[in-house]
Image (cartoon, rainbow, N blue to C red; front, top):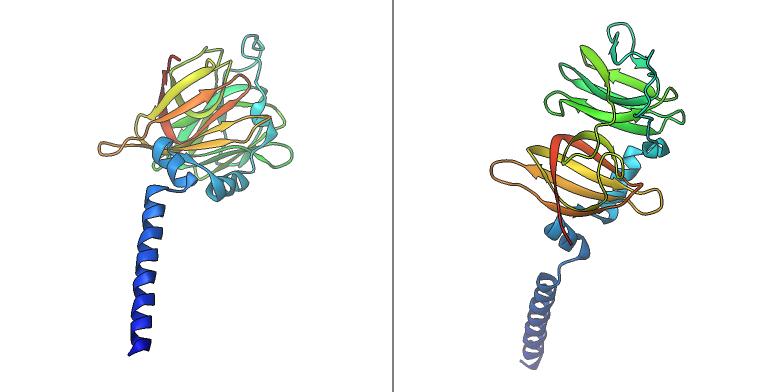
Amino acid sequence: MRGLLVITILFSSLLVLSSCTSSVFQDEPSEKAKRYHENYEIIGKEKEEVLDEMNISETIFDISDRDNPDPEMEGDYHFDVANEEEFTLPSGRYWFTGDISGNIYIYDEKDHLLIHEIIGNPGVSGFVADVNDSHTIRIDGLESVAAFKEGNMGPSNELSAGIWHVGTDIAPGSYTIKPVGGFGHVMILDPNEEAQIFEMIGSQSVSTESEMELENGQVVRITGISLIELERVEN
């Protein structure tokens, strides 16, 4: 009888301890859950896996000369995808697009990835990137692909998929960023600091909104989503 009483007391104690532990975890969520819930930021192992998979090229920080384009250089390029899969372009900033659905990859000479986007549905209508003649453009599945030379457009509060340089394409400062529609990610890459990754979801039922601090020299990499909006936050 005494043994049964001891077992009952131990079992009750375990239930109380379990309840208290559960309460602690509910009251104090992990840092990863907190950062995502408050600002849709992805951290920890998931972030490292994304960055490792992307194998991002250091040339992503290079900015092409947009103010003094070569007058003899063509502005538009149409790739012969029926007969070739790899191409190069003169240095510059370009808008890449294609038909009907497929992939565009751009690699540096070390075979590290500058950018990859799926064009079509699912995917984006196109993207912008600064490339040079050492980059290799690889195309898969698209029936036609074109690259259009982009000049110096100046800072904008609407950004398409692609690579954007803070201080050139985006003014430094604090912003609220939200998607116009679709699902994708916004990455903030810094040559001297750790990268940040934010998840973007835009639909009739769900819409995310993240606050970001952008500094000169950083790169904003938008992937998987055709358009996001930036709203300046005054401090």
